[in-house]
Image (cartoon, rainbow, N blue to C red; front, side):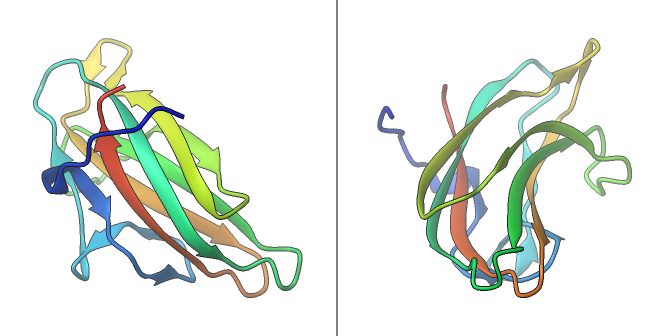
Length: 127
């Protein structure tokens, strides 16, 4: 995998365990990035430091979502990837759906199973 340049302004999720479905947070608050009202290609870089498969039924999916409004009243999935191990996962995406540019981007952690727990960071980088 190529190395990616990190920019703290493009951090979607900081470190911390996730045990239930939720929008990604930075500093305890949901994080949304305004990428502007134009086409944008990106790669969501997911660095997973810990993941629990103790009951063998746990599942983890990182979803990159876009919206035309900051409140994410109608989120649109731009890309998704299952996380199955500790390490780096890259999720390419763009913010254009059927000619509409989704100005706001966030990550959403989708967990399942008996005792899910995953600790990762997520940031946006250039493809």
